[in-house]
Image (cartoon, rainbow, N blue to C red; front, top):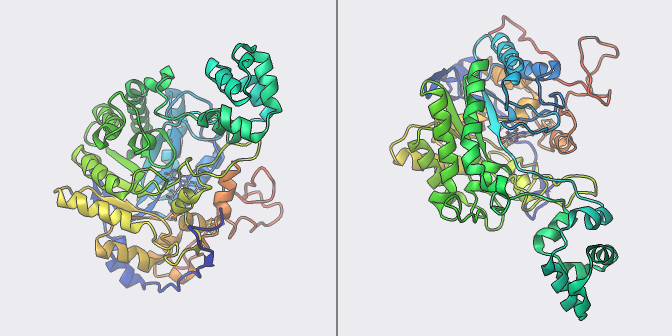
Length: 497
Ligand SMILES: Cc1cc2nc3c(=O)[nH]c(=O)nc-3n(C[C@H](O)[C@H](O)[C@H](O)COP(=O)(O)O)c2cc1C
Ligand code: SF4
C-alpha cells in the first residue's frame, strides 16, 4: 500500500519547532490527567503495535520483553501492549491471554515495563477476538476440497449450460467441470461468497449466523473478554483495552454491514449491544477501580460501513456505560483489502481503509499528518456535550510536538497516541520533554514497518534496524539475521530525568 485516496503527492515532513525544556514543562502534553481511577503522568501514549515476537503458541519471549522495555525507556504516559488473543486458538507469534498459563509471562512483561520506565508509564493490554480468515487457495484445491456442491449450484449449472442433466450430476463431475470452467461461468454459478473464497480465501463474517459458533458469539464473548481482563489484572497491568477497531470481531458487530437478525445487528443499538455486554461483563469481573478502555473506529472508510455519525453515537453510549477512555482509530477493514497471492491470507491494511488507518506521505491534499484527529474531536465534543469527562485518545500521523500540543489545546483529544513515530524513536516523547527535540529521529511515514507486519515478519524501523556493530552480543537480530530488533539505546547527555 503506497498511496492514499486518488492522490500520489509526496508530502514533505513538516518542519518541526521543538520546545525548550521550560516550555515543555508548561505544555499540556506533559501535564498529568486522571484516567478513570488512574493517575497518568503525561498525555503521551504509545498505542498497540503487533511486533510478531511471541512464541508460536502465544507466550511472551525475551524479544517481547525487549520490545516493550525499549518503549518503556521513553517513559510515555501510557503504553498499550499489542492486540492479544482471548481465545484458545493458535494464532502464530501473536500474544495470547486465553488461559491462566499465559499469566506468568505477562507478569514478567509488566515488571520489565515498570522497571524500565521507573514506574512512570501506565501499562494496558489490548485484548481481541477475531474470526477465521483462510489463505487464498490453489483453484484446483478449492474445487476439490473447499467448495460445497449443493443442489442450488447444480441448478445454476443446468441453467447456464442449458442442460438439465447437471441437476443430477454427481459431486465429482461438478468439481471436475468447475476446475476447468471459464471465468464467466464461475461468476455466474458461484455465489459471491464462494467467489470470494476462491479469489481471496474463505473469511467468516459476524453475520454468518447459519454457523453455530458465530451464532453463539454473543453468548460466549462476554465471558471470554471478562476472563482475559481478570488475567490481565492478575498479571499486574493497569488496565485493559477492548479492541473494537479495525477488522476484528467487535468492530464488525459495530459495523453498518452487520445484518444479524438476532438482536445483535441492524440498528445502531443492536450493533452496539454485544460490545456493551462485553464491557459490562469485563467491568463486573475486574471492578470499578481498574481501567477498562475501548479502541474503536471513528470511521470504517468502506462502502456501506459505519461513518463518523455512528461512531459519535457509540462514543456517547460507551462513555455512559463507564468506559474509562475511548481510543479512536480509522479504517483497517477487510472489505476493501487487496487480493492476496495464492497461499497468502488477505490483509486488512492493503486497501483505502488500511491506508487511512496508517496514512503515508503519499496522500491527497490533506496529507497524513494528524489526519484522523477530526474523528476524535467530533467524538470528544459529543461525549462532553452529553456530560461525560471520558478521555479521548487521538492517533494517526502525529509525530511532532506542535501537532500534539495543538490537538490538546484545541480540545480535540485528551491523550496523543503515536505509533510509528514511537517505533522510529521510542525516546521521542522524553527527548522533547527534556528540550532535546532536535535529537528526535523523525518517522518518515513510508510504512516499511507496516510492510513487515503484512508479511508477518518481526517489525522494525528502517531508520535504525541496520545500525549494527558486527558481532555485538548486546544486539538481538531478526530471524533474517540482517536487522536489529529494537532501537539502539539512548541516554540523555546530562542527568537522566
Ligand atoms: C506495525 C504495526 C502494528 C500495529 N498493530 C496494532 C494493534 O495490534 N492494534 C491496534 O489497535 N492498532 C495497531 N496498529 C495501528 C496503530 O496503533 C496506529 O493506530 C496507527 O499506526 C496510526 O498511528 P500512527 O500514525 O501514529 O502510526 C499497528 C500499527 C503498526 C505500524
Ligand atoms: S519504518 Fe520507521 S520511519 Fe518508516 S514508517 Fe515505520 S516507523 Fe516510520
